[in-house]
Image (cartoon, rainbow, N blue to C red):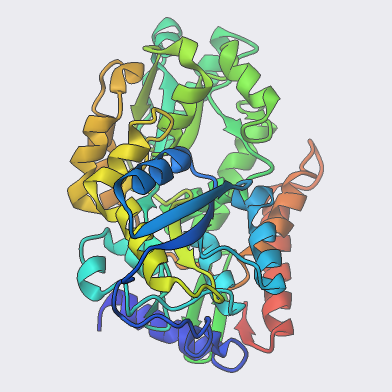
Length: 438
């Protein structure tokens, strides 16, 4: 049995009593396995960079399907709440963007349709296996993976050179580099801790080998006190306590301002961050470079920070058309070109065959012509396949975020925030009638 099937079989067993939606729910739909025969119009909600460009390109090249696009806030900034409310009201769009971390929660609530009759094993075989695993639950396919999001370290190569700081390859070296940066400029820091974004911390734990959610037989096992998570929490707490990193909300005016004035000279992000920096700081073209994420032993290792999939909502009556569009976005040269060529996206396609297309479409002059896609390729291959998301990610992340916001010198810290997230997760799973250990 494959890793994906083994794991997802466990997921269905563990959720059967209260979350039978994994095998039985997700709208009935009216489509057969055939592609749409006549011209239809579908609606699509999303927020990823370049989405409108992709929709415009699709509409210009297709007469049988037309797409109406609405840009919504990113998932955790209100987008998921908007999607959930629309599903409850019965007026959800046909297709929605959902990050891998949130997909199990939407599936477990019955908000989505199984698309396995449209998105076949042959289609999935073309994609990075880790993304297929994250969109397969209960041996059913719930979304079309678009990209993977391997971690990466973006840094100001001009200021690293000025301060004589070596690009770190291990977390020990990262701390030493952080000390050098602060010594060279008392206001400057090597990176930022994002109190509003637990997913960045979770990606660090993933990289270190943590496995927070595990389904065995009919029980969810929750473990956020493992050695890997404890190590990552203590490490970042030390950086905060010693004033070696800033603490600002992600993508906030404070964070952006510190990048502009050179008081933040590094960003621990993911592949999509290359487009974010390019779009946010165009005046700094040629000053940035990308390095592999520091690891604990210096060997390649990555978690996944974000990553987008496209799912069909339960009440859509245009499943075939919606999947056709999702596949076009994710698995065709034209779709990837349309997104990357906009200049705002540096997405790393889940479809291996399309990564050369993305590389060619992305103008890497911002990074001095560096082959950033070769770096993403190596990082993507090093993503651990052992991480799984549970059906209560919203509860987990909201709780951790709330407690991250309360971190103060001498007060509650990262470990307390993770503990609170653990307790809230166990309580929510128990409330749903599931067996829990942890």
